[in-house]
Length: 103
Image (cartoon, rainbow, N blue to C red):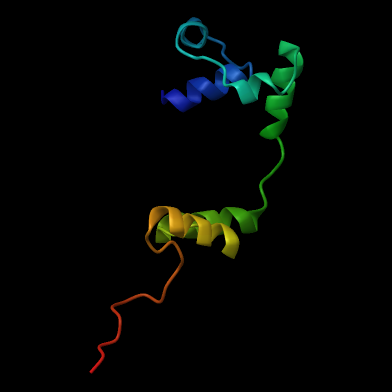
C-alpha cells in the first residue's frame, strides 16, 4: 500500500487494521498545518474528512490533467510567470512541433 494512503487514512481517522494503526503511531508525524486545523483531535479529524467530501470542479480537474500531461504549469498568468522565473524554463503550453526555420 502506498505511503500516502497510510497518511490519508491516519489523518482522516480511518486507520482500521493493526498494521495501519502501528504505521500511524510509529512512522507518521502530523504536519503543523494539520495540527492547526483544530485543538480537539475529533474536530481535527472531522475537518480533515470534510476536505475530501466536496467534489472537485470538473473544469479544474481537466486543467490539471492537461497541464500534467503537457508538462506545463496550471494557473493564472501571474502564477505561471513566477514559476517560469523560478525554474528558468518554459512552463506554458506552446504550439506543438519544432520552431519554423528562419532564413
